[in-house]
Length: 151
Image (cartoon, rainbow, N blue to C red):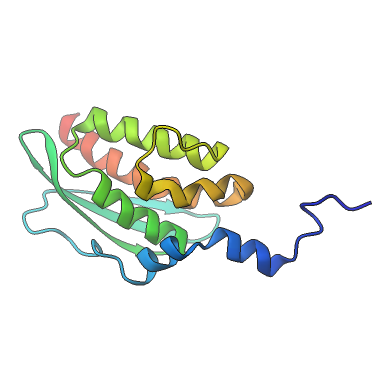
C-alpha cells in the first residue's frame, strides 16, 4: 500500500514547495544587486545542483547596514537570498548567526516559532530535505563574508 507521501502527485509537491511568497521574491528580488559602499563579499556554491550566490554587505558600526546578492540558482535560493537581505538589516555577526540558525532549523523541521514571519514560507522545505541547502546557501555565504571582516 503506498504511503500518503508517495501517493502525492509530483505537480502538487512543486506547488507546495514554491509558495506565492517564494515565487514573488525569486522573480522580483529587491536586493539583487551590490549595495553602494559594500566592502564584504563571499560566494556560496552548491555543486550538487549548480546553485551559486554571491552576497555583498556594508557594515556600519559592526552591524549590517546594507546587503545584496547575485544568484544563479533555483527560486528557493534566490528568494532566500532576497529575504535574508531584508531580515539582517541592523544585525551584528552574532545576530546574523542566530537568525541563520533559526532559518535552518525552521527549514529542517517546519517549525517557525521564533522566526521572522517574512521567512515563514521556507518552513515547507522540511518536506523536501534535498532542498534544505537551497535555503541555507545565502546565509552561509553572508556569515562567511562577515567572519572574514571579524576574523
